[in-house]
Figure 1 (cartoon, rainbow, N blue to C red):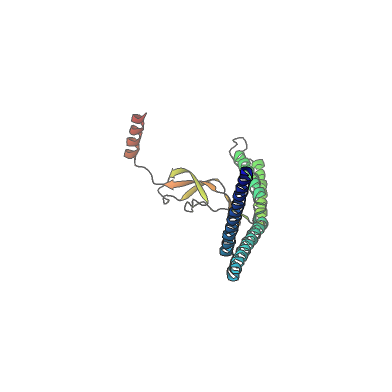
Figure 2: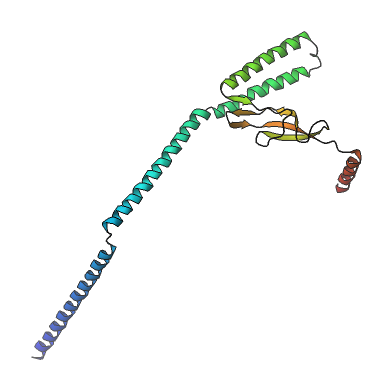
Amino acid sequence: MEKEENKTTVDNEDIKKNLSDDKNDKSENSNLDKDDEKKEKSPEEKIAELEDKLARTFAEMENQRRRFEKEKIDAFEYGGYTFAKEALNLVDNLERSKNILENDEKLKNTEALKKTLDHFDIIYKDVISIFSKNNITPIESINKKLDPNLHQAMMEIEDDNKDPGTIIQEIQKGFMLKDRLLRPSLVGVAKKTTPKDEKTEENKQNLKDK
């Protein structure tokens, strides 16, 4: 009898536990359903969200289109930029060769030098003409005011006849490709003559520093 009573008691406790678990499960499911109801968006909200996504997508597509157009234009306009920059070495070599010949004491005032320099001038003009046809143009420098966007000052030269900052010497010619800088002109600019007293004082100060 006692065993049967104990068994009945255990069975009742299991039933109560199962009922309690069922209630908890139902309660949790009910809470989840309520949360889902709260999270469920209205049709207007869904439409607004879709419109926002579409607007962002169209904006990104437009930005990509503009980037592509710019890259296409740059490729067409400046596709030869690297080649043009390398081609400037030809001009430099022509000018260097001409200067070497002009300063050769053995060739000075000879008919051979005159003819050779004439040929150099013809070649140089042809090269500049070809450059110009391809929108590669030299930068004007002599007697111009120094422009940091176009010129690079390499030295200052005393000259009271020119305003300070005026370019009076061109060391290396600069070039543009349309509106883009290929390379700046290397130049010497004028500065006012320093009085002798100031030079002497400056030299003394330099000696003290040493």
